[in-house]
Amino acid sequence: MKPKAIVAPSFREMTEIFDLTTLERLHGLVDVQWGRNGPMPQQLFHEATQEATAVIFGTWHYGTDAIVQAGPSLRQVFEVAGTHDHPDLDYDECFERGMTIGGCAPAFASAVAEHALALSLAAGRLIVEGDAGFRTGHERWLHDGNIGATTHFGKKIGFVGAGGLSRALQQLLLPFGVEFLAYDPWLGPTKLGERGLKPAGLQALFSESDIIFVLAVPTAENAGLVSRELMEMLTPEKILVVVSRAHLVDFDAMTELVLAGRFRVATDVFPQEPLEAGHPLRRAKGAVLSAHKAGAIPEALLEIGRMVVDDLELLLAGETPTRMQYATREMLAALRGDGAR
Image 1 (cartoon, one colour):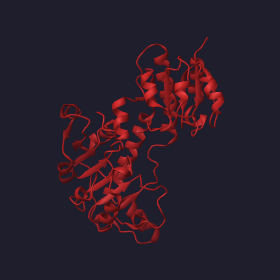
Image 2: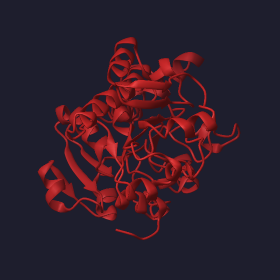
Image 3: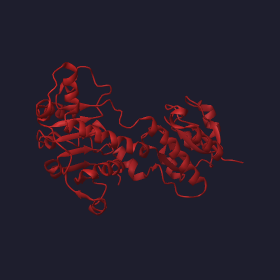
Image 4: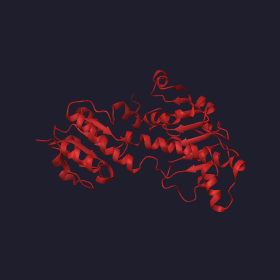
């Protein structure tokens, strides 16, 4: 008899993350419970957790006591939203039971890295500004159109955060012959050095880098990490690219400085989404603005389903999963800001 798995990906839809081949693989591995769009009714969910081996979910609709009430067979919890921040999921009880808590964030790394590179290139080569000029009949040709433009080749690249997203972006930037600097208090100099990243404090990174990518996972402790003081160190030819969360940046200061022409910015994230219609950043000549769409392309969403099935197959075989990002107490302590390390 196959093990049972609750498949309730809402807010995502089934076809959004499972193509036909992946869905067939999933049904071959487990007896799928629910397996449709929309939240699973709570009573059905609680009944199913008495015998299920795994839960695959998008939003945790099932209350804080759902894990406590689950049967002993429940061993895996996979989230398909992209974050280990689900307030009603009792992570502590999951850890106490020795459960595996997988997250799908790695599915987005390549897509976000690609978009981050595109944003930085658009800012450096004045592509958005040039396109806007064309559409109003005010385009600048040849040399005039390149006044203030910069290349990526041979530049110093700064990473604020050196996790999985930076790994994907680093590979895309290598052909430009760049030098990498990185700030990441979670990774020591040895680990950074093994990847070809020069460890740097934030002030050194902002003073030395030509293009800075904000890639860190938001935590309770790094709100406003990219401060006015740091951004005031940038000069007009430098580029700040924000693709993880606006939480990490003093957004008001960034807006003011970009409007003043102090540096260029390209951002995919904002403190309030959608960005209010009258926000001054919308009229900043030195800004490239993207509507939080770096990661959620169809190919990346379907990769979520493949990751879940790949790792579920390994876990059911008693092997170590390799595809998803697995929560630890230390990781969640940082997200919560409770001081644990």
